[in-house]
Amino acid sequence: MAELFELMGNMHMHTPYSDGEKWHADIAEDAIKAGLDFIIVTDHNIWVDGVEGYYENSNGRVLLLSGEEVHNPRRQPQASHFLAYGAEHELASFAANPQELIDQTLAAGGYGFLAHPHEEPPEPLLGIGDLGWHDWEIDGFTGLEIWNYMSSFANEVKRILRKLPIQSSLLAKLVGLYLTAHPERYLMAPEPRTLALWDELLVQGKRVTAVGNSDAHGTPLSLGPFHRVVFPYEFLFRAVNTHILLTKPLNGKLEHDKKLILEAIGNGRSWVGYDMAHSTKGFRFSGQGINKGFVGDKIQLDAGATLQVLCPTRANIRLIRHGNVVAEIKNETNLTHIPIDEGAYRAECSLLYEGKERGWIYSNPIYLW
Ligand SMILES: [Zn+2]
Ligand SMILES: [Zn+2]
Image (cartoon, rainbow, N blue to C red; front, side):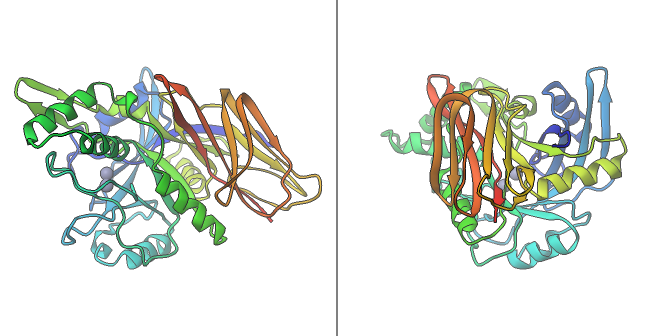
């Protein structure tokens, strides 16, 4: 197989153009520190023009691209957030009609993902709502943000609080603050409902691509004497990322490199990795049938077809077809499977981190036909 070029990126974050703290250049510095190759900034309801390009310092460089997180501010609650990449123009005016928003994004040559699709019910004591996707009469979106770090953490906090006999908002906030001190203890995996929805759409024969992101805001949290940034950008850039594979190397020119990166994201040549548990660099999911291929490819099935998952460290590896585990191996770096049926096959890996088995890698499918 031709040489593949792996890039690590994060594609959901905010600046003061909406409700984030840091400006583009400072976020780029944090991304370089965390070792990211690209970031896509997605402010709420504003596509910021004129900020794209390579940001460099003595430690390296990162390619910053501009996307948008669109939602309808008149909707109550202000849920159903949509991530648009590569549309190259403002989309907020379509926010009131989610299908129109999807269609306009795709018509502009972009890709659209449902952001943090499933959230726990609102937690009034903390003032956190349910900002999941609520408008399901839609079709044609590129995929799902299956893992959003901040949303995932908020879901865990809500679940923990529900089990405690707490009535006071101050007490709830103290518990919340306590949990933010060691968020890695509470971050487990994508929401099972989101993975089930992904499988359901794949069963329908749709091509549905997963991404995983930080949703970094860098917001300082104040509670009495405590005042700190609870989830700095750099911390989140070391956590849930999307890794992509390119068949051609970048050449350092914005338009060329942007096109390669966006195509890989849109076509699912990628996986979601929880890099804080262990770097997911070097993961590969490939297949060999009539033709050879890798993650995101369509491969024609024949009698000797094989699928192979390769992990950068030992993990529990599962191969999933349409919601069913068709092959599984524990504490290994390799899984090989001879598929019999057509369909979409995706790989999941988990490993022990902070005393518990955590979701680690969620690969986009290889499509066998
Ligand atoms: Zn959102
Ligand atoms: Zn966001």
